[in-house]
Image (cartoon, rainbow, N blue to C red; front, side):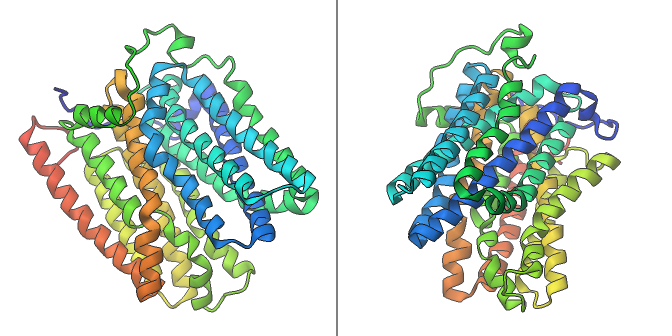
Length: 426
């Protein structure tokens, strides 16, 4: 039976994680890899549209991006526990590069068929789920517990910067090099992180630390066993439930509806107004990383994480119901700010409280909840939007999430009171 551990906290200097030289290199490599991930989306989605004009294939692309997190996150976390996380990260980067190279070959030879596209989209999705838990697990070795919140927040910021830069750089590469040579060039952008991982002095294999005990990887039973082992820790349970409900009800499904929101706000063309609306959330998240780190704001606390999600619900609701373009941009910017703030805080709390011997599995379970459940967010926002309009479907989803967040906070507070007192859970 696992006793709950305490919230992370304690005052740390601004940008504390950057005091570790390895962290600086790792963040840069992560940003480039995330940028390359999104460049591939820009080019491959464009070519899929040009060649097939298939909404079903476009929908399959979204499913293959998130469904692997739902089904394989815990297994990927188990791999990071059992083997050297550096090699798991390299395996993920290798799959990303393989997908880019194969896209390029098919574009050059003009032999792309729908089944080719489906296979490559699956490979890309599997690369993402393989990369994610190991990339979070190795942060402990780079910065230690003291600066973990700073590192997680900065890693989230680096990923957001990659997300923000990816579409712009991808569009530029598409114009300058064309789709075939552009996506082949994109494969090279994964190399800095891949090569650095060859001899990076992190992870238990590099530092000589005793590795976690080897555990058999048993698929679904691993998920159930991990849930059982964390069930008595209100911090891990509450943060995993919190991000899961947020992903299930809203996730990032509103991004796919941005063209219709832009049209209803009077800016349905593909000009600057649409671009600003599309990137406002990423810009808000990037601002959150810089501001919160420069001021060393928002020490980790479960209650603060819940309050941030409540604020996110309100911002999403304002965006959904606004008929004013400026208000809508401001609301989605605030939503992006709060999204990074609560996401990085929840992830930090889970990593701090996860037992070392199953930390990868716990991170995988968290990722399954935070990312995998986004697979279904299109139902609440997208299919609901077809019935009652996207404005009300998104607004009602935000209201439902607000109610669910309050209920989850009440449930986990009761759990905390039934256990021994846990700092930060009240």
